[in-house]
Image (tube, rainbow, N blue to C red; front, side, top):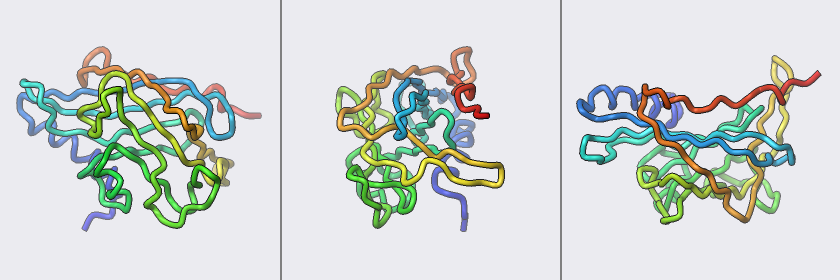
Length: 198
């Protein structure tokens, strides 16, 4: 039985599905935007996922949506129905969502999470998409949890676990679609310049 987390198993399987897809084409989807993290610091954020589409335009496979934060090691993973097998599955029946983790996240009102079933984030678009394959070029990102701690001690020094600031108003993110391996298949890198401390 595999001990890899569900997200790693999905991402490892995706290239195999693409290779077996014959005439299928793989696409990357990504968007970079600027907002505040929970500490009130202005940061860049990168949201990304991949799809595999047939010549008819039918999407046969998708990866989860990942949200990265500049200067942070924490990655938020949003999944849809059928992806992963954790306690957040109940919420995925109605959309692309992320659930917080006890000890790592706090609810919107600052309380510790009792289990991994608390809905902490959701993604949709102007048409109310509830599956990753249906997401359009303009996404709505809702965040309703806070990191329990933003700085942790590691063997290499302090590490950052912060992520985007919770908000009652959705973040609006423009997303680009590019064919995998093409000239535009280059999701922007998050600069580390602002992360350097004396």
